[in-house]
Length: 104
Image (cartoon, rainbow, N blue to C red; front, side, top):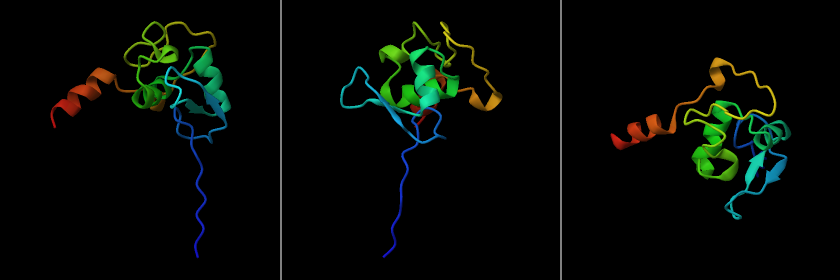
């Protein structure tokens, strides 16, 4: 018999193990985060790709992801902590992804 271990990865960076659950506007679908991304979520300082990954799963209309705090490309407007963003941490816009899906 083969036993497989699974690890739940953080929804935003999709790199680290999930170790924090933060409630959302949808009680049945909380945010599942690593500690560092949890801090960035609460300080409106997510990297664009982190925001994008959460917006795809939870909706950009969630309070902590709302357009009062982030642009459609995931750029934070009201950073409470400084975040360095590399090329690999940029994200597509939701509008651009929607246009791609509309072609199918």
